[in-house]
Length: 369
Image (cartoon, rainbow, N blue to C red; front, top):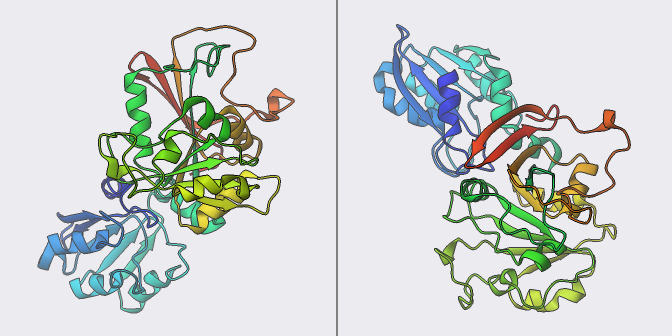
């Protein structure tokens, strides 16, 4: 099962909004004869690859799979059909699939056909693996990654708002790798005005993230790189390594009339009725688009909103061995914050690893995944 989980991980960034799934086939004597994983959205599922590799050796054998086999016609035929045709005698699944069109139905089909079924082996690891998929099903909201880089004294920039570059080359490489695995990269108005970001993944990853701006006021620069590259088929005013990796630009605002120029230049302007422009309203819209993972990159106001609302699920923090000082130098996370240290968000499963000269801190909000 642990090998199947490792196989499933290979699908990260390629299969969403589907779950990552890995499968292993053992013959009737318990010997390894096949493996597979779900490789891309719309493609064959893990069981199909594993059973094809095993061939006739699967008959009378065991299928070890990280998620309940599907029993419905979607983009591919039911995996339960493939399992039964292969003559599998036993299925060991890490967890049931809560997707409404499955939800135990796949296991029921197999049991009804006389297949021995057991569920729950390494279940905790399987739940952690597919936490974004499970959250989207459960809440209609995507999994939220929060990322920032800061100095050793906790500053986002100098007192003169200079933030180029806090982190080193290796940390920036990791951030672009992360961007290439998510469905959207989200920033606030001030970040667009101060940094003029492109929000692309360079080099391209398995996904091309939408570039999302949250601006309640609708006050955004008349000229910036996001607006200049919003139209996929427009002029290439801003050169990139691979211009085709520019994702769409989506702007959430309470004042859409102020962004008619952005809309004319190819951006999708979404006017929210929520005058307070809550982050949850933005995430609800992105969830309806079946975005599974989104990355909040800043600035301090947007990250603060995410922390105040306890909306962030996973954290990626890069700490550079630099000290800038200055009472006026901004910190990475704004918002209201907490009044008592006892109420501070304490991360789970925190890891620390070198990232060039920086330290990469990675962790999860409690009970997330």
